[in-house]
Length: 179
Ligand code: SAM
Image (cartoon, rainbow, N blue to C red; front, side):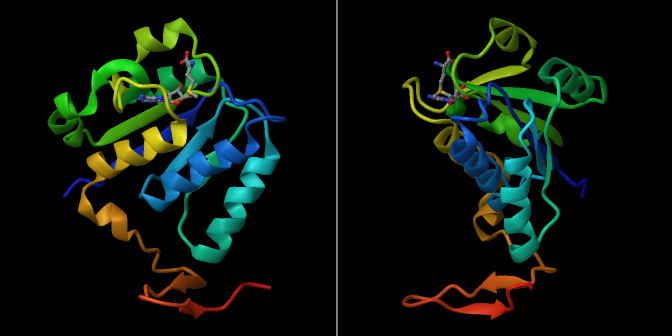
């Protein structure tokens, strides 16, 4: 079976305002099985925050900041990848879901404030998670849930120094916090 590669491209990030939301975009992508996140701004705090989670809970999720979104999209497409831009103006996910599930290299673009008009043109698909305004974190979570298949909700990292044992009450973990 061909291994699927899914990455997120976060555009429009404003370091003073969007740190928490962008960190949660990355953590959501990681938790639902994506490989990494490109960030079209420089922000070492995002790299540290997500890196800290990965060093404790495992996996090899990458975060690369300071990318130019145009070059990032262009390179992805030149190497055979498909670009999905999440926007409330797009085609609703249920109408594209079957087609998108069969793509092996997928870049998912989420915006912050205003997304440049060019993005709507260069994306292979503009996909709406309902035609109502909401949030990039919610949009990404629902998109990945639909596209990655049922195993995404049980993402586990075999090398994890610390992992959670699901339990009906209380908190159970396996392993140790790293020093
Ligand atoms: N007003 C902005 C614009 O002109 O594109 C959107 C701002 S919204 C807070 C930030 C991001 O959340 C969007 O760029 C999009 O990626 C995502 N988003 C919000 N609502 C969405 C929806 N209904 N479907 C898909 N993505 C959505």
